[in-house]
Each structure stands twice: as structure tokens, then as C-alpha cells.
Length: 350
Length: 242
Image (cartoon, rainbow over all chains, first blue to last red):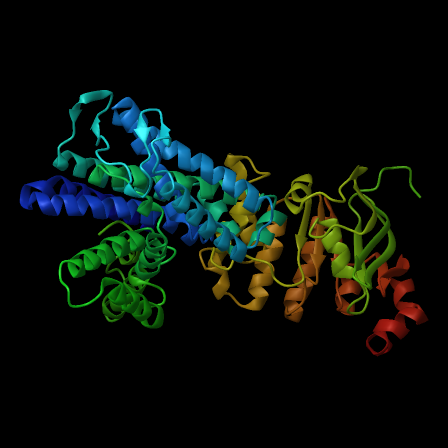
């Protein structure tokens, strides 16, 4: 009964979100649509870390490695084929394989959490430097010039599947990006509700206990990490589609740090939290960027400090807790058959 | 010696940590469906022995055979899949998961999807945790967490069950219940129990193996062991004399 109600509420929330996405272009300026598209692609990136860190217990300091690889894989394939269909596939495939390889050596090599953080950070730095030093004419993959620190301009944006002659309008790009965000969110929800997801969380909770029950923690972590890499790669493709441009900055350390801030501010251990965290912080940064009074990094640092000190659990868990408290207080004097407790869990979406 | 293959058999098992010899030349045999108690003072090497049996550490030398198959050097999850389950000394549970999820995760490997739900419900009943099924284990009391771990081990239906101090932190009534459950399970499975509580040992044991300073001091019936002056000297003294 209660689980059914919760599921119903979540589906209702999902429907509201989908209708909202469909209505956005009709109500706002094209500039805002573009900005929301960027936020949605960042939110997909946030989900990748939300999953592996919040549920898999794997803190990757280099989620941008997969994001950047996805972005470059998309750009290179799109330039060569002049079609976004195979490019999107490559943008998911290449980072997944890279994550699988990196994960294999680290998890099966029994590298501890701290060193795992250092390694992911270093890999990001290496990729950043590699991408930066490809400015000569000789650095090309097929017809795609990598362009070094100048990046690759005029990357073909999304087109209708298998139909390069029909590029998507910005509004359609918004539908695709926001749709991808909803799809990734639902996919992760489904994974976490299923068998594999429960084992992932179990391994995060207690690796020794999981292995004493016959689960191989190395394999479970590797699979979770690979899924996270694929999602980050997809985010990279969405990002390139937004700007029709890719540069080594997709591997930048500041972006790496930002992803961790999104997840921390939104709430570690939730999926909705990091999405909200990403949108909120990106919105703050872009608003600050348009004036010259305060430095954006200063504000970002202040926001992080405030959250770590005052709301260490993050936005969504804190609000959920508050909502439960309020509901509890209201229900106490009322009749016991008031509302089912499931209504207290806003698990769906905003 | 019997001619049947023992369920678990260690030969000259030695575990060294630097200069410390935690297990020294241990030869240990357990028949199918046998119930054995391990006793010995703190630091005698009982938990170390369990860690070698479950692959949590690789012995320095010696062999471990499970039904004639060598398991030394295998990883914990591989040994667990062969059918050895352990409740560790310090409660080893998933603090963020519910009781039901614990039993579900444990039972999932061996139980068919159809009987999975039934197994989980049975274990909930057995450990008297039905009312706490949806509780997050991190919020439960120490005694209840002990039950969660015991239930988790049982739900996995292992062939050999290792229990490291199952009655620690339990009330007398719960200890008695644990003894009942151990007898119950022993009808179909072999169990090795490490305990300090002599009342508990008397309730469950037939054969007792005494560990002392990493070696096997003696192995005999419970009465013979508890009457042995050496055992009294090293460990039991006051408790049994009283």
C-alpha cells in the first residue's frame, strides 16, 4: 500500500517534470532555453558522480576525465561522419571502456580509497595536458583536427537520427538534453531498485560483509564505475551539442571540483539532490559572471563552506527531513487514519 | 581417523605477522555436520584461524581443505560461494540497510526467486526480527545487530557456519535462545563456535578444541576439557571452579 502510493507520487512527479520540459520553450526566451540546456547537461554529469559516490561509495576526483573523453569522442566522430548518431554512441562507449580499464587496474589492484582519488585526479590532469598539446597539424583523427588548447570549433550539433541533413533546432536540442536527463535519472532509479543496485549499496556499506556473503566487491565497483563513466560521457556529448565546440577545458580541475560541490550541496546519497545542486550552482555562477562586483569562485567557495558547516547532509536530505518533521507534527493531533506515511517521501522529482 | 573426507581440514596451518606467530602449526579436522567449540584466552589465535578459513587473510604456510579442495589463497567471496559463512567477532553488518535487505542479499545466492521471500520471512521469524524488518540496522541495539548478523549468515545457507562469539552482549534469555538455534541448525550443517561464556559452551558443545598461544592445546569432550588442570590454569580457573 505505502510503496504503491510512493510509486504513484513519483510517477506523478515525473509526469509534471515531462510536461514542464515540453512547455519551457513556449514560455521563455531562446537565450534561457540555451542556458537551461547547459544546466541539464551539467545535471547529467552530476548524476554520474551522484551514482558512483553516493551509492557506490567511490569518490572520483576525475569525473571530468570521462566527461571530457565523451566530449572529444563525440566531436571527433561527428566531424568525421558529419552525423551525430554514431557520435553519441561513441561518446558513451569510449568513456565506458576507459572507465572499465582504469577501474580494473585500481579495484583489482586493491588500491585504497585515498589513492583512488589521487589516481583519478592525476588521470584528469594527464588528459588535460595531452589535449592541450595537440595543436599541430599532425594531430588529427581522421578528418578531425584536435586543435590543442584552441579546441575544436564548429563541431556538428545533434541531428535527427541517421539523417545528417536535418539538424535539431535549439528547442529540440533542449528536448533531447532534458529528455536525456530524465532518462538517466529514471535508469539510475531502476538500477538502484533492482538486484544489482542493492548489491552496489551493500558493497558501499560494508565491503568485507559483502565479500563474506559471496559478492565480489571488485567486480561490483568496476561495473558501477563503468556505468558512471558512460553517463559522464553522455553528458560530454550533450555539452558539445550545446556549444558546438570542445576545448581541453572539459578536463579542467575546476570543473572536477565543481561536480563534487554539486553533489555535496545537493545531498550525497540522493539522485535528485545533485541535479538540483548542479542547476542551482551553475545558475549562481552564470548570474555572478554577468557582473563584476564579486568573484564567482569566491561565492562558490562561500556556498560550499556554508553547506559543509551548516547543512552537511546537503539540500535534499535536509529538506526531506524537515518535511517529515512538519508532517509528523501535523499528524500527531490528527486522527491516525489521516495520510499514508509514504506521502512524506518526496522521492520523485521537483 | 575416519576414512571419510572431512568437511574442513587444516594441516600445519601457520600465520605470522612479522615476529608474532598468531597461528602455529594448527592441524584441525571437522566432520560433516559436526558441532565444535573453540575456546582459549584472548590472543590465542581463534579469530585469526577463522580469518584464514574465510580467506580474509592468506596463511603464511600450511594447507586448508574444504571437502578435499584446497582453499588457501582463495578470495573471501570465492570461499563464501563454496559454502562457508561467518559471523565475525565485531558485528559486521550493512549499517545503512534494513534488516530485510540484509537477509535478502544473503539469501539471494542460494534461493530460487520463488522461495527467496519465504527464506527471508523464515529468518526474520527465527531471529525474532519480524517487527524490525524495515528498520535500518545502524539504528538497532548491539544485541539486535548480533541477531541481524547471525540471521544474515543463516540466510545464505552455508554448509559450514563459523560463529565468532555469537552470544557476546546478549541477555541470558537470548544466549539460551542462541544455543537452541545452534542445535537446530546443527541438524543439517556443521558449525564451529568461538565463545568465552562457559555456560554457553556447556549448553551446546560436544567436542571442544582449546587454543593457547597460537597452538592447539588439546581437543576432547566438553567435560574432559573443562576438567583439565592445564585448561583451568591458562584460562578458565575461577569460572569453572565456582
